[in-house]
Every structure is written in C-alpha cells, then in structure tokens.
Length: 461
View 1 (spheres, rainbow, N blue to C red):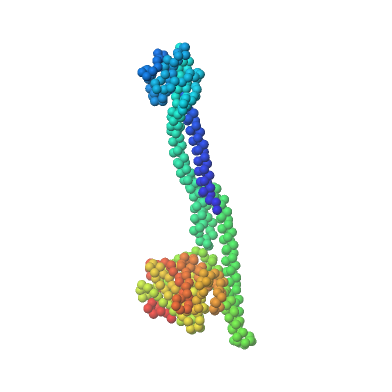
View 2: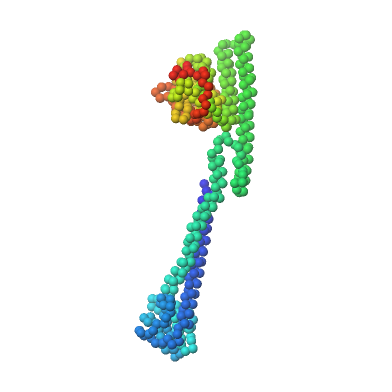
C-alpha cells in the first residue's frame, strides 16, 4: 500500500537533491570560470606593473616586489627590442616567446598559462602553473558552496516538518475514526481546523455515517416492532391453549399438547430475546449510575429460582472478599443492563445443566474492581466452540436444552457497552462451565440502602 507521506517526502527530497546538485554544479563551474578570469587579470596586472628598468638575468638578479602575488609562482620573462632575453625569474625555465595575449603551453610535466605584452622597447611575458591556478580556483569555488551545504539539510528538515504538519489533519481524522465505538455513527465534527482539501472527504464520510445510521436504526426498529408485535399474540395463544386444555374444548393426547405448549414457550422466549437484543442495539451509550450488584444478584436468583426448582438444580449466590457483613458491592453500571446480563447467564446455565445439578453465582472483589462468576455443573462447551458461542443464533452440536442462541450474544453486547471483561472456561477437574465477568468500577459515594440483603457468610440458596 502506497503511503502519501512517503510519496511526498520521496519526491520532494529527490527533487531538492537534484536541484541542489544542478545548482551546485552551476555555482562551482561559474566560480572556477570567474577564478580563472581573475587569475588572467592578475597576470595582466603583473605584466603592466613591472618597472621599466627591470633587466638582467641570473642567480643574483633582483626580484620585483609583487606583494601577495609572490606566492603564486609567477614566471616573468622580458625581451628587449632586438629580441634578446634581458630578464627571467630565478630557478624557473625559460619559455619561448609566445604571441601577444593569453596562451596555454606545456613544458615538461606542467602546463602553464602565459600572458604576453608588447611595450615600446620590450616584450613582457608572465606565466603561472595551471595546477596552482586550478588549486586556488577549487578553493574559491568550494567556498562559494558552503551556504548551499547548509541550506540543503535545513530545507530537508523544513520539508519533513511541513509535510508532517500538512498531513496531521488526516492522522487526526484516522485516530478519530479508529477510536470510535462500532455503534457510534454520529457525524464527524466539521470546524475551522479541517483543511479545505479534506472537507469533501469528511462530508462524504458524514453522509455515509448518516446512511449507515438510518439503515441500522431501521433494522433495530424492525426487530423491535416485530418482537413486540409477536409477543402479544403468542402470549394470548398460550393463554388460549391453557384455557382450552382445562375446559376440554381442545382434544388430543397429553404429549401432543405438551409439545405444542413447549414450542409456544420456545417462541415466546425467542421473541423476548429478540426484543432484549433490539433494545441493547438501540442503546449504544450506557448511562452509569450507582447500583448494588448484590441486590441485582439476589433479585435475579429469586426470579430464576422457580426454573431451578423445576429441574431440581441447586441455585445460590455467594459473596467473596466482602468488606463488611452487609457489603452491597456497589458499582457504576446500567441497572437494567446488569440485570439482563446476569439473568441471561443464570438462565443459560440452568437450561444447560442436567437435573439435580448446581449453579453458583459468585460475587468477588479485585482491588478497585468488582466482578462475578456464574459456575454450573453442566456438560460445558467444547474448546473449539468457546469463541463462537457469543455469535447470534449459534448453538453447538452437543447443546442441551431448548434455547434461541441469543442469550450469550446479549451478554456479550451488554458487556461490550459496559467495557467489561468477559471470558468462558470449562471447569477443571469436574464438568461444567464458568463464565467470568470483570471490570466493574466500584462506587465510593454514599452507601445504598441494604435492607433485605443476606449475610455473605450464608449463601442464598
């Protein structure tokens, strides 16, 4: 996948490097040419500034005072009117007389740059090694490049900073979308900080979110309406079935009537689960209020006690790590959501526990968090299916009891809204399943009323 940042930085830095290289070559070449012209001007100046009485040749001849030009290894030669060499520099070879003007000659292993000047009574020739000129020209050219050497890294750093700042709104938009909940379909905020180039993208995203929200809301409304409309006729059908069975107007074998009533009960349970799931989907945001987890547990255990007694299942509530005898286990949560979550777990455990089994609800504390476990003595769940049981309408191949496959999906949805930890594991060394819910925040405000709550020492059974 191509990165816009890398693409921009790559081409900008490559373009800057190429332009800097071309500019450096141009500056260097121009500096060398100008240095060569400067040295040619130096040769001409020396030739014009030589004194008129300078003459003689030999070891002891007087060298003219040339100031700073003496270090440039200048060779000076003078011929008189008759063409006789009357002066040449010490320890330097004698050049043949060259034409007037600038000339480049080769003597031995060296190249020389010479300037010839015809005066009234003499001919002056000044020469300089090309290597000396090149070295000095190179130094001057390099001195002209140091500002470019400083400018390039500063420009690269500026490009990195500008590209990072320029793409920051895209990164902010990505983070805003990645940190959103799956149910958060509110439009993105469009204010003055959003660049003009990104506004069409934000507008398109908001339009997509609006359409998704409308489609999701339509789906939730349909499920809620369908569940609501089905619940009333099913309840009426069950009442009519029971009334007809009692007054004898409905004839048939007892097993047939039991099967019909069982299927009606299953349809009623399915509709109730669909309605609960629709309500959970319709409330993506949870309003946290102080609630007694212990009181909710007692109420749910009491509501499920008749179902447990019908199957001769020992259902109980236990409190571990209680701070006081009447510890309410007060947490911040949605009371209705926690009641539905715990009720589905207990109901699911009872339905999948054989007759004469055991289901325990255990409240526990861990530092500043509260959680609970629902442990049963059923057949458990195969390890390969533990990750799939939270899917809607999923029922394992070996599932016992009559269920809709929505109980654990509702539990997962409520736990997700509360941002709780939810895990399943089979009991070690004995049959059954343990569902662990953790991460409820404790409430440290004023204590809630505790009437009617049993002591944690004596489990409710």
